[in-house]
Image: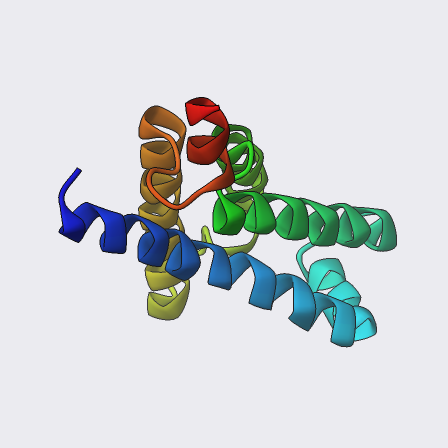
Length: 131
């Protein structure tokens, strides 16, 4: 494996996981505000769905970051992103929401790469496959 891949793969996982871990942190530190935002979009049971979102983002984000069960973590995050993208970012007349929608599509694409090819070098999955 080339030195470029040995460096690029873990950096890619760090960058990809950061958005989910930071988003979970933001939801935790502004729980009530996030609930209000969700309610504006007609979400029922906001506390329940918010706790679910936080758990999915932390579990999936750490899975990608550490490269532990990274393919499953990628699937979890794709499953999380599809409804959240369609609920919160499908107002295409708003340019910011269109950009957020496209950003989420790009993230889904990156996650599908992890699902397809695994986490790569310097990951728990890679280390366990050598044992």
